[in-house]
Length: 484
Image (cartoon, rainbow, N blue to C red; front, side, top):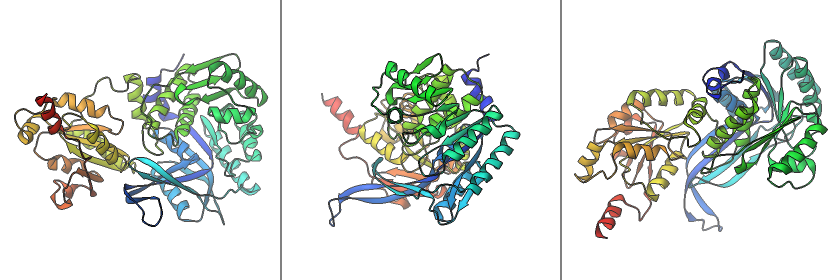
């Protein structure tokens, strides 16, 4: 019997155990505003507003599996340094078992630092040192893995970022041991020589990685990808080859078949870590023995959510479930949260160590200024929740002719934006009482306010004031329409 995608996401996925072995990293995002060019050199000056650390590399794959509800065990190397401490702390916050990590002396934990301005990546700085595990460290990991297999694992992921962890000795030992327990090994490959992955259950390259492996350019067309995929699959004795194809979705090449699933058109803000998202869904679905068509649909939807966010992002089980049951358009209908629902959701986000941003407004006729402001607010944290003035409060603030759009329509349009996670309506003139329930990490206000003037500031971790975009005003738009 084929496993239904909804039942899988609601229940089955929470029973899956997976091990992730690979190059563990941290990703640091430094976000600021860019308003001028440096007088010292022709470079933009980024006025830093926030900084956050998230798991990267193999650790991001592990975090994606954990966010989907799986029990995850991680193995890799970390250094005795500050980035190693950040890595351990983030893994712990994500609920990932770190018993397979080995501490390597004289080794710098890999860290990637991304500088963002106006929600766009301006520069990336990398700290890394390629280091292979010693024979003793390989033995430690294999003993660790065998113990997990004896207690029941659904899948193993080898996440190779070319930093030295996935050697041929380790990869072949893992694949051989997993086969003796009939557990699939899925590989996120690196480099053009895939000999060390020989015999794996599946490999998940993107189109460029597949082209590097075969040594020639491959057009992003089904026939060409299947032909190349079958040759690679036979050469390295793979059960499946999962090729991610950007806007054209995913193709799975198996012994006697090939399955294609196209992606859904959407806004793309950042592709960082999207491959890790696909790997996590593929591994979990493989562990559950899901049919290939459903597996690829789930992976496509998860990737679509991931690329719509800024920075490395772990797709949550409830997000993917919502996307699955709502169809490809994600939000055909939307009902704003009640205060109780919003309070519980914010509490869950904060309990996972995620930064919650809150802003509020009437948002009567959405325009470019609104969108830019919301994108900037969203970039300050992991989730943006918008407090929306009710129709009654808009009339009280703006006059009897407002709002132009009712609260149901305004909440629907806000929720359709990629930058907005949820909307909650308040009937008071200010969101102060609502904020006393939500208690966000960051309260964002737009305009020329002083922090001391912001209502409800005492209930937030901190307050950020963002300038409105000049030249955009709902009031002026209404006047312009009336004068025509």
